[in-house]
Image (cartoon, rainbow, N blue to C red):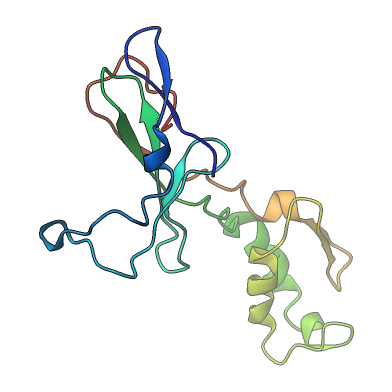
Length: 165
């Protein structure tokens, strides 16, 4: 595991002492929620600890990274995943409406033609659907661009918040 750099003072880079890189032999203390068999979390190659990874329900991630201070200190970043774009119903709705009967026939052969909206919602920017009436629906016109997730950064006293963000 790589050493984590922090600064003791404004221009004094330090490296964590060797005992901090492998803490498996340190005693546990129940008062602080430490239990045997727990998980040691080590920093990645960027010096960031990935504390909580996207779990599929919330999609949130939590990371910690060193920040500048007179003692070793970390800041935390809580991040949302990028959200998919939204369906442009004003543009797509009329196209689907005038093709409802045609969508029941091959090559679509849809029992419920309104289920085409699910396929349209999953379109990417370069995708194209050719409708029975000859209309070509492009992904860039059907779905808005993805929305980047939000971030909340929690810091203590520091003069440089570059690490966690």
